[in-house]
Image (cartoon, helix red, strand yellow):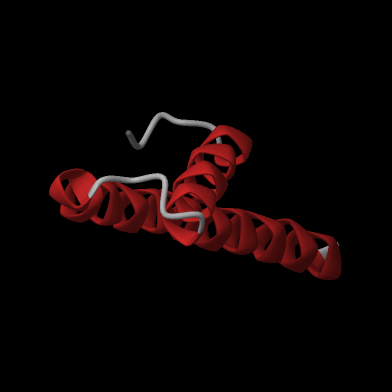
Length: 65
């Protein structure tokens, strides 16, 4: 799941949340969907953190010049 693009992960996460809010997910699959949602949140968070570090490094490299 780590190779999933941020936008696709967010799309899947929003779909799961929508289905939970609209009670479209059966109670038998609820824990599976919550587990999947948690994994998607981690993917998104990791990608944001990586992007922040990369942007910070780029900005710092400009300051050194």
